Length: 100
Image (cartoon, rainbow, N blue to C red; front, side, top):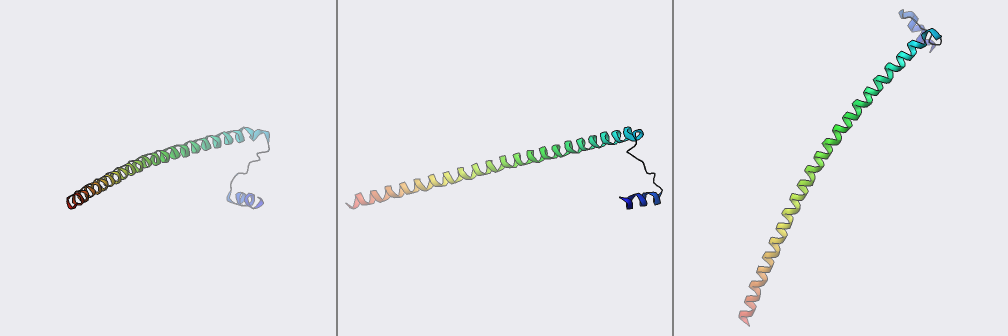
């Protein structure tokens, strides 16, 4: 800390003694200003988080739709295969009955 004070004095900056009651109002003003900046930063981060959550929700909904479409296609393919199998069995049964 001594180095900072020395460099501040060398650069011509005014050093303030914040332990003095006459500067407590200034300290309070700085504190309030910092609190306001922090509150603004927190609000900004919360807004960004909400935006990301919304994007994730949209993407999740898109993925659910795509999954449902794939499930529907697979179900149709399965039902088609079952129908083809039933038809093949019917043909075989017909052949077996004709041979009998």
